[in-house]
Length: 275
Image (cartoon, rainbow, N blue to C red; front, side, top):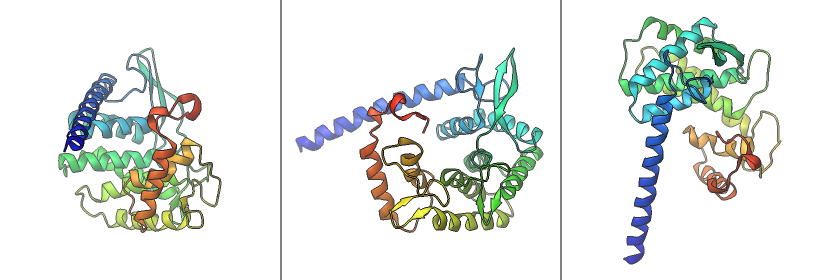
């Protein structure tokens, strides 16, 4: 009884700490939202806007029921998506204005995250009567994803034909959330998602080594590398990808948490701490 009492106290203490962290994170993200709805990575007075990470931040706010802020972000993101014909980049604030800084490093992943956020927002708000330009944004994102697909799987961009597990899982998640967002006529989205789902497991699961391939047709893997090698192994779990062998995924998760205890992670050793 005493053991369980102490365990309960420890869990309560951790939960209070986590709630404090979440409150602080939400406050910081909201403070970094710009006047047009964009989210800055490093301060709204002079910073960068990376649509990929901005979508992640917005998903966090959505989980905290900050629907208005997320709606404003989707307004901004959709506007830029349409302006650039689906080729969004990374932006820098200079003299009070956002200017194009550099191209996105993975067009398929960026499009997937946009659809993921859009689908979640529509589900949370139970929105069915969308603004016309949101409909156009969704349609354009789907069209661009289709253009990057070869045999049901997406490549990084028109110029870069590399096929990554993590990017394809982001696209799969975007299609899945949009399919279940309450929109009419989602048959084409469902077909695209089903084909991608089958191809991900077929092309990326390495049955001989009992792990996920990071890149299509590549056995490159370093078990001590946090990113992308380690993170890729739990990405299917993060995005709730319906793998056939769930027990194997539990083993991969256990291996990940043993090898990469978050308290011991440092930028010097691991880099890419966003992961």
